[in-house]
Length: 133
Image (cartoon, rainbow, N blue to C red; front, side, top):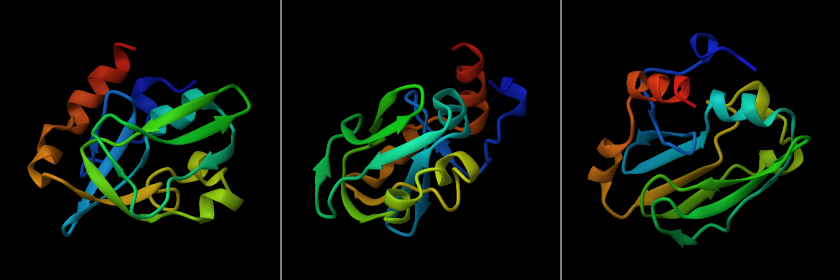
């Protein structure tokens, strides 16, 4: 396991207590699993994605990631409707381990209330949160 100081945590992202990252792009949010999450899970071997058009509540489970260690649910950071899924993850789930912030985004979604994004943790708060885990 990585030390918290060794985690790759981009400054321009927001984070959740369940270890997802989120980035605003226009009127959508792109999200995936943080470096902390992929490090804790180990080698990712399977990703189950939602369907485009599905709607979820913030904090609602919308996907499953399986690793050699365990299965873990993935939660939408704020209320929203899925606009795109990263189909590359179905055939190459290991991308989550190698590039959690670029290649391995999980979904794009349109938030029900765009202002909710601001309630997610900034990098400093998230780094402290990870150190307390």
